Length: 223
Image (cartoon, rainbow, N blue to C red):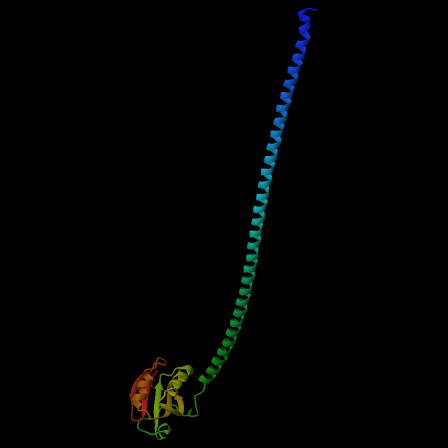
């Protein structure tokens, strides 16, 4: 057997061995790549799961905040409706009171209109002041002073003037009164002097009275 015939099988075995080694290396490298790929896939998947969990937690937190805000808004709307209802009830009550007061004013104005047509007081037959120097019933009672207020143009003005005199601390009693030709005549029992009565009456803010003159037992004013 020649040397070439003997070496041929040896070369074949060596080639087969090298091929097997190369195949093993390739397989090992492929397995390593697959392992690394699986690890990367697992890592990415885990990262995505973590991010997904974070997003779900954030979504739940936002949902909770939205629900809380909705609850607050609902409570505020309920409170506003309650306040509006209270305001509406109070407004209706005020309107009702105003209507009632307006009706009373209307009745009072009607009554005042009726009074305007009649001379006030039991002395209605007297239409002019008693001439100066002639005594009359108003000055007949001891300790009384006669007060006359001219310029009376309405019942309300007359009532304000009468009340002003009656409310004076120095006036003990209003003995008699009547109205004639726009002048209110009063006879009052008082210990005050006419000048003092005049000063007190003209210092009032309402009604505003102007002093015409004072006498021994009389005060004349104008509204």
